[in-house]
Each structure stands twice: as structure tokens, then as C-alpha cells.
Length: 384
Image 1 (cartoon, one colour):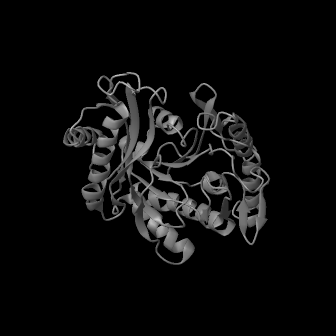
Image 2: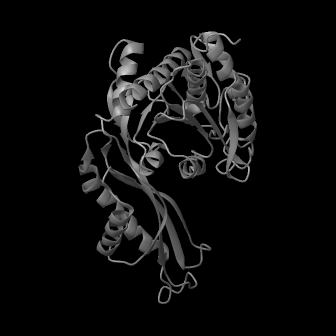
Image 3: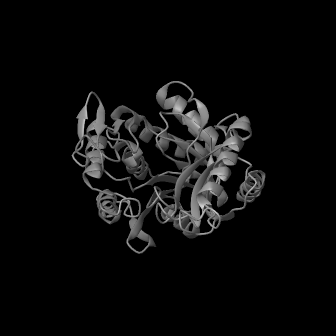
């Protein structure tokens, strides 16, 4: 018989076990090729020791999701989701995989982003699994690869349907109803290679790109920053990577620029492409434009059953209604929403995502676990 899953001792032990298990995303940190395999095994063992059926679903070779379910298959279904992967550890000034607790903070890579959330989901699942009259089905989506291409979330929604989802990216106890999307573009200008002395023959692709960059920067300042969404703020873009030239004494034949555009709810990749083409035309030069990747924004209905359930649960557990807002960054929530699953985000508090020192507040992980369990009750009661 396991102890109360909501005690600080139980949740701390779970969280420390997760942080001790490296799960660095191998695509973004190839010198730390840990991946999610080891942590998926730890989680499956944790769940099975508590009588919860769990399984591995490979989103791609060597990139596992953990799937588990509890409750009744005849009622409505609710997904609780967190990602298993972390960014790399280069530059960290604390031991990344030796979790310590100090002043109520648990330190280590992934503690905040987002193994604290995984621990909260596990505790909520353990508590709900003890109930014989749960009026719906809770699905755990503990997914791979959020830090890169979201292979895990995309695979999960292909395999499973649900009536609602709660993402648990850290939110400081706020109810997140919207986030930005993004579009990655590649722009290429062409010149004419010639010896550096042959100004009469050479055409610099880099000089052409400079005019494009100035036009892009002006569009960002004068147009995008004036587009504002009440929950996520203004649209934006930035020139992220540039490459060109083959030597100091050669006119550059080719220059490649990669741009990230952060999109607001309602903006589309097609709109971004059309606007970028117009910006390039205004620069007075030509550039080839290629779409590399896009991810949609999220906007959730604040009156939906899942939003009401989380709002009421947080009010009951914490003692006051949560702040309701949006965030500027992207998360897997939009993948669930795009699959037709009403989705909100609620998570613990902390700091240091992708930084040299990372920590999560233990008490916030405990309260998050309680909010998730209470949200399931309220959601099932509302829609069953």
C-alpha cells in the first residue's frame, strides 16, 4: 500500500527520481544523446508499481511516449500531458542530474521544464486510481521531443482521441488560455562570384541580403509590434541565423538567412509567407523564400467545460481564482487543440528553463497535482 500521493515526501521522491534520470533531447543536444528511453522506463515502473496500466508508444525510433489510463472507458476522457525531454546541460552552474532541495526549491535540469509537472501528473493519477467511482477516463500523455519537433504530441493525437486536455507547462499557477505560434522561414539571395578586385563583375549576395534584413527589421518595428493580442501581446519576428560567402577575396555568390516569426491567434503560415514576399519586394531586391516549419497559435474558450473545471479546481485548492492569461512562447497545447481537443494549460512555479540554474517550487508541484485531480472530477461532473 503506497502512501498518500500528495505528501511532500512522496512528490519530492518522485521528482528527484525523474531529475536523476537524464532525458536530454538528442536532436538539440547531440553531444548528450540521452533521449527519453530511460525516463520512460522509470515512469512505467512507477505507474505499474501502483497498479496503473502503462505502455510505451514510440513516436519515432528511440523516441518513446508513456501512455497510461485510469477510470471508466464509458465516460468522457481527459488528457493530462507533460513532456519528458529537456534541453542540454552546457553552461549549467549546478549539477544537472543531482537534484537537491533548498528553501523549498528543487534544483536540476528539467526540474522546472518540466519534470515537476510530470511528478504532479503522476501524483494526480495515483490519487485518482484509488477511486472506484471516477466518472470518466484519465489519459496520461508523457511525451517525447517537445523541445524540438513535438514528435511525441503529434503521435499521441494520431493514436488517441479525447474530450479535453490539460497541458502542464510551468505557469506559476496561472490558467493559460492562449499562446503564440511560430513560422520558420529561409531566405536566399543570389549574387555573382568574382575575384575581390573585379568590382565590375562581382555581385555580393550578402549586400543584397543586407537590404532584405533592413526591410524585415522595419516591418517588425513598424507593423508587427502594432498587432497586439490581449492575452499574448504583439506579433514579432527576428533574423536568427545567416550564412554567406566563401572567402575574403571573393564576392559572395549566395547568402542564406533564417527568420523566426512569432504569430498571433488568427495568423496563418500563408499570411506570413505573403507578407514576407511583400517585404522583400519593398527592399528593392529579390530573395527565394522557403517555409521550414510552422506551429499554430492557441486560443482557448474561457467558458469551455475544461477551462471552468480548472478554474474551479484551482480556486478550491489554492483558495483564490487563478490569473487567466496567455504566454508568448509555444507549447504542445496547440497540437491537441488543432486535433479538436479543447485544451488549457496549468502548471507549477519556478525558474530557469533552459538556463544555467533551474528549479521548481515543491509546494507548487503539490498544489498542481491536487488541482489536476480536482479538475478531472469537475470536468467529468460537468460533461458526463
